[in-house]
Length: 290
Image (cartoon, rainbow, N blue to C red; front, side, top):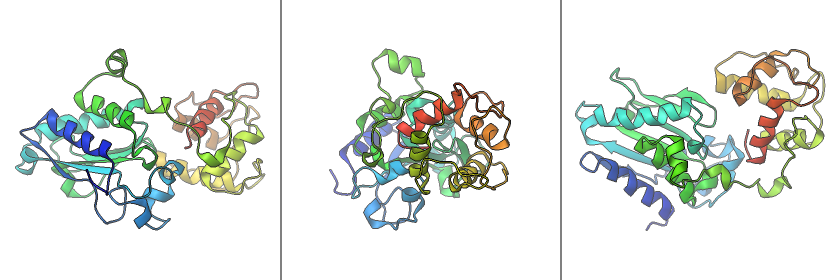
């Protein structure tokens, strides 16, 4: 349909419009500007839509991976329609709904306060954007899933208001079922809850730090990168000192924030036998992301 984006994105746009055809209209997919609306090939490696997650360095580099959907009623000050879909996306983010695992973020209007609300699905945190999102919903898809129909069907299920159970009961798939590790990452990690050399090396690869399979002490470049990421994702103020990720059953503040980020029990300890936190980490690393 267009040389600037995949046919699956056009179908997603058509299906989205069909949810409220008298109100919703496609505002755009490709735009030659920073971010996911642009093709990766047009952007510097420093652009956030390329730099932050390894999955965004996968997929076709000549296709855009974002969509804007305008609500005509919201343009006139009636937020009924845009609130419906924005709230469904926002709640999916809050609930860590796996149907949104292949999506980076959305912006829209969830209430009537005149402020823009959004959610970063990868960083698991709220976000915001400029006032134009009071009348249009923006959704960014991770570039590694540009050609994925499963990723878009899962998001459409959220927009329809289906529960995860309802979606799966009718045969709906999750994008995590289709994920394979990045080509350069080698075989999948064993999800055993042990912070071994292979796990550390894969983590270093994804965080773009030196890859020696060792967390150096007292100052590790990997831990520094993780601490910065956790501070940004969780809006906390961890001391960025490169220390505090050790599997020795002792308490560390960085471990507690890592557990919170990964959605496991927060006790600030990495258990020495099997750590549920490390299991969750290994699963994410196998998906090519942190």
